[in-house]
Length: 66
Image 1 (tube, rainbow, N blue to C red):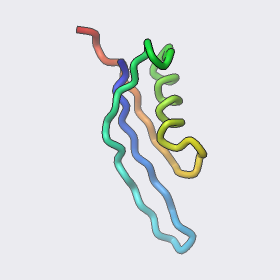
Image 2: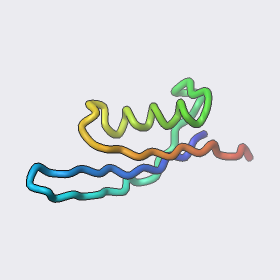
Image 3: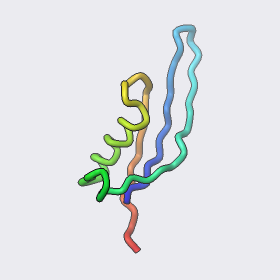
Image 4: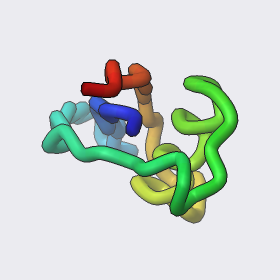
């Protein structure tokens, strides 16, 4: 299981900028076929911004199994 945190930022043509925190969500490596944290981050990026419109910063952390 991977915990995903992210922020999305954008800048408008008239000079305004905004930043939005994405609520933390989780990806299950057994469902998505994730092999490492970088891969989890890439999948999360594509979920958050599938068309590559925004500037997205993603952090994926593998959760300890209990």
